[in-house]
Amino acid sequence: MRVIIAGCGFAGLKLARSLSRQKDIEVLLIDKNNYHQFQPLFYQVATAGLDASNISFPIRKVFQKIRNIRFRITSVQEIKPNENKVVTTIGDFNYDVLVLATGATTNFFGNEKVQSNAFPMKSTSEALALRHHIISNFENALLARTDEELQERMTVLVVGGGPTGVELSGAIAEMRKYILPKDYPELDFSKMKILLVEGSPETLAAMSEKSSKQSQHYLTALGVTVKTNTVVKDYDGTTVTLSTGEIIRTKTLLWAAGIKGNVPAGIDASYIVKGNRIKVDRYNKITGTENIYAIGDIAYMETPKYPHGHPQLANVAINQGKNLAINLKHQVDGNKHLQKEFEYHDKGTMATVGRNLAVVDIPKPKLHLGGWLAWLIWMSVHIVLILGVKNRLQIFINWLYKYFTYDQNLRLIIRNSYREEK
Ligand SMILES: Cc1cc2nc3c(=O)[nH]c(=O)nc-3n(C[C@H](O)[C@H](O)[C@H](O)COP(=O)(O)OP(=O)(O)OC[C@H]3O[C@@H](n4cnc5c(N)ncnc54)[C@H](O)[C@@H]3O)c2cc1C
Image (cartoon, rainbow, N blue to C red):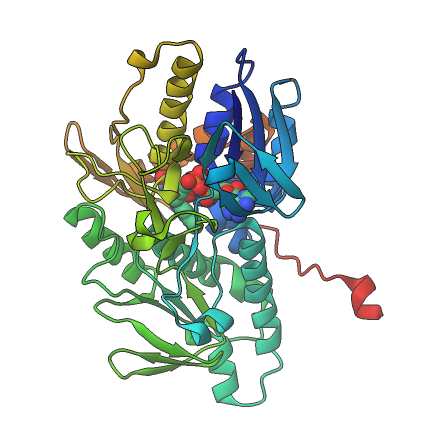
């Protein structure tokens, strides 16, 4: 069986690893990057807490000794289901089974002006671009000629009160508290404003009420102004217009307000549902197809437990990859009757706001944890999930260093000097 897996995120990587060394299964793994990205820690790359290489792992290294898996770095452009063919930037590839695991990208909900001026954080390169902007922004603040210009540089607006927005605002607030005043003694950081804007009535709306309330409380304690029931209507690179009519001037608008599936061309539009996700059955097979599957963020599966689809989380993606691998193996060895429907067992959700400040919800037994203990759990889980022993060690040492010194030392502005000189 020739399997093509498009996308090596949490879902695609798990599937490929589970199909490693399988007799009679040949895998072609495709990704537009040559590395797997650990998205939950993007915000620490963006705020100079971790190096990009700590959270991005070379795909070829994972499969160095695996002979039935080949990797190609390219972008999937189109699927031709009738010809069992995938069209990519480096040519066409034929498959017996195709698995789409292309994840999601930032959703600006059609607001092109916001899209061209805001900073998203959905890839390692975007997290690095954000870091570069944050640091350059304070260098430029030193050159401000008017109070108005200075305030635009000293204001950060984060849009979206989900885990990403909450974690980003908390991390920036900690930079303001512990690092920026030391780096830029000429600037008055009591003037720096950090705002978090959220369309719903609370932050972390997908978590328990206790977690929502606690996260907002933690953010406020860190000096973040939280504006709920508010959406961004417009942003031209300096002026933000909110739905309340309020105008805020900032050079830094971080967009963490929504995602949409990366659906390649060629998928019948009638199978694409809300959030640009592809409708699949309980085996992750795309409705109306015989040999095309979708797993992870891009898949939309209704189950009695999740009638409106699963949450777009790493753990869902990993488990869908695992389940599909078992089912494909049964298809090859002629035990199709042993194939299993996907069922997600939620082990809990968590988010961190800052040093000693996190929230954890555990469904069974129903439990909510906050503060230091939740923060410790959050760190332990992330260390375990990250790929590679070296990365684990480096992240652990980084966090330890940061904990005792209240510092992080990755605030470099690296430019392409060769191009600039030319
Ligand atoms: C900032 C942030 C923080 C998060 N925090 C958490 C968290 O704390 N806990 C949690 O459970 N979840 C978290 N998530 C969500 C989690 O990361 C996703 O649910 C998970 O990554 C989904 O896995 P996936 O394999 O479906 O997609 P992804 O991991 O997004 O992988 C998709 C892969 O497909 C590749 N790709 C995309 N399009 C193409 C194409 N056309 N051709 C070739 N390759 C392509 C991409 O390069 C990528 O490698 C977070 C997400 C973000 C952005």
